Length: 389
Image 1 (cartoon, rainbow, N blue to C red):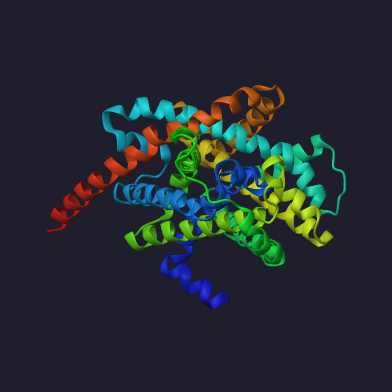
Image 2 (cartoon, rainbow, N blue to C red; image 1 turned 30 degrees about the vertical axis):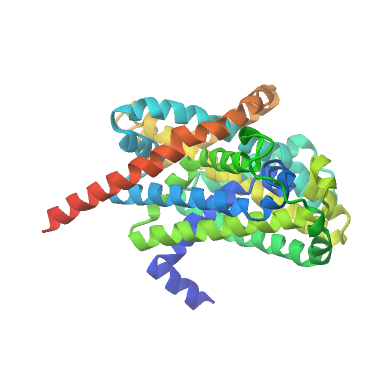
């Protein structure tokens, strides 16, 4: 096993898997683990839920492939440089739009981590009640310890935690398979364009891609390690396979309780409560890993962005000139900011506009990347080939 891992690292395939796993672990947040996202965007529209998630993830895989390849050929280290380079003269304005969208995403995702950590940890420990404040503190410490030590630690933690999440989901499917199979006929085959386009299954499938692409800052920061075209391809393939397969498997688990899941605020938790007690522990472990990895990737990405932006404040010989020091300070700032916002009620206001981000993701990110990035990649490759000749 160690020899195989060593070979994978030498060939760069392990790095590609880590970047794909970063996409997966950022995607698998609280909403995914509780089952609310799967129901809201897919299962409530009937049997299209068994293949529309694949289309949604395929769209994102194409977007992230072109993003990582653009980043690689232009040697871009972070998402701020990525946005500015991709959009050229409009880059600064586009960066303002994306900073707002990504900040809202971070507040919601990382806020959910801080708020849900106590419950998830208590479930892992067999139902122990952990005070909410202690959960906040423990979550903050864990996120800081991973996010503040740089990209390598973030990628390694995402890769290994993703394996744990995958294992739990597969176990849930295996033990729920008889019930799932017996309930599949109860999931209706509905018109994917009904009752109207903007209320239909196909629109919500597209909205899910728009919703998820708002986290692209995390993925672009992780993509800085990709050095060859082969690695970029494999990162997109690994990410697609992880996200599409696990999303489908979770949808199948939930389908075993159809149509009751449509009225359940936490359908996966309800399902687990009806199973063996060991599954409650495993499920809460999955939630714990999902919460941590989502918060870590997002807080690291924004801390790195603002660390680079604040480098202009550097004075010769000062502590602020140390990149690691700035990164750690900005990590703390964002952890505190997320905690403060999640406790003064702004999150509820933000949530009302969060659905809008799902739709803005298409004109702000998905379509521009799919249209502009391939052309600029081809142009840059021609320039590089000409320079070599």
